Length: 207
Length: 207
Image 1 (cartoon, rainbow over the protein chains, first blue to last red):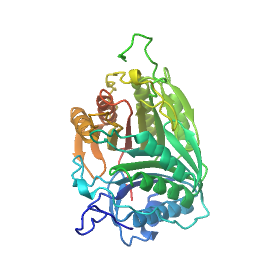
Image 2 (image 1 turned 180 degrees about the horizontal axis):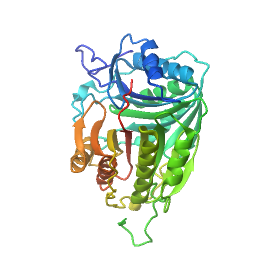
Image 3 (image 1 turned 180 degrees about the vertical axis):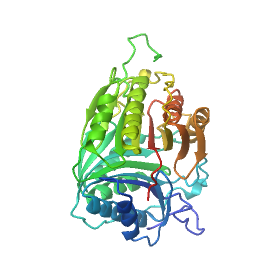
Image 4 (image 1 turned 90 degrees about the horizontal axis):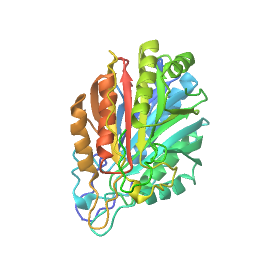
């Protein structure tokens, strides 16, 4: 991860910048041992992993977080035959309700990670939220940031517009890579950027 | 639903205003018949329901959408003993990538629905995205809108701050009611407001 700030003090860490994910994994059949095995098999180097009763918080650099998330989801899908995951990626707001980053620690650029192909077909419904308030004389333009991110995603996965979300199809690596690339493209101009993706790996229909 | 616009033309419909939800339900055990039964048992009056291979799109007024979502999730949890749902509520941007509401159709106020108690304990991790670009001379303030929405949610459910999300505990009706009330409170000042909540009904842990 390359880090750029507008001051010469030491570079903020991913934790300073609020980088991380929340992951909830739903293997087909819902077997608890599948969940435990999927998390245990993933490479947790560089990430801090905290499970609670709703989701698992994963904190670290963008590349480490994405690698860990992909490995958990891939293993869960392989063990169960089908899995759905909800992936929530956040950066730029490390706190809880409060968002207390200093204004000069805005943009730490990170390149989108190159995730290894899995051989697993995936479909995601992805939404991106660039929380750009604008500044005096320069209103924000969250739809422009979203359009730019969708263009970036299109270089990695098959993209289709749907109501409220963008659909992504491809290898799990392409789909998660597209989500990450769009999130990080928006993060070059907006500090607080959140992505949500519901990712289905396998073929069981909803509803 | 009461509708206020700045012109005297006919009030925009919920579909004009892009009101709706995406719901993905994961009953413990993942049995397809549980999903089918949960959707079939819900009162679909006033809503348009479209399932795809990732989620189910529910469109209608805020009150009708929330009623339907609560009934599906409650039935799924009762039939399976435990369920997790991902609920994605959106308003103010009816299109797909493009967001083409006229500027004078911004704010259609809707009261937060009163959902009937279910007797089911629920926990949600909730995030709210008021996509407020600001306007010339008036930067947006998405964190203020979030803080106000959390204060509204606190009147309905037990609220705890967590990383990236706000935790809500209570009866499923209180939890979904808090999510809806916060979403609609933000919608009084911001046109495009999205809420995401991962809702666990029952007790099986993640991870």
